[in-house]
Image (cartoon, rainbow, N blue to C red; front, side):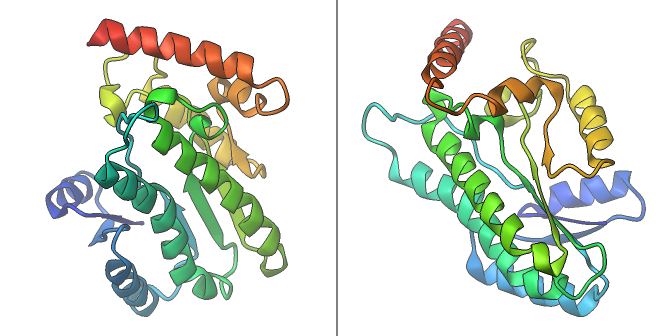
Length: 222
């Protein structure tokens, strides 16, 4: 297993705690970094047959007013453009491998957007759309394309580690690993299923109710 990220110190901490892992520095928002890392992986790891796209930014924005341009560009590049570029750099290599798999971490916010993180939610909706297209097109190459769509989980995103309403990380991991052992293409834990089923002509009720609750939570935490 090879993990990647921008910060070498964080990578070293993870591989020190998990003997057998390797790490490589990668900035998914930088096309040159993607090209360099992809070429190195193909040369050094010719048997590589799995790619998991997991990078993400989630910050509050101002969809009702002027959006900070740096936040907008960074979020779109990291959450959407980066995974597309990285997959594009490796997909021809993966076509020649047995049991090849590409996975993307999207979010239930791609189905039910959170108004206070409108840009993040929009990137996840776009990523879901891209996954549907790529899954269809890669069927002849026998490459599985998975989408992991987490609900609210206790992670560093939006300082959620202590959020009681969020799903415990250990529970999310356990449920996700169990589903990954099946042949489904969308990895949805139980807490995510209502969000996935929501889009349609009557979707506004859940979207509005969800955002009213979210605003109340953020206001109470402020």
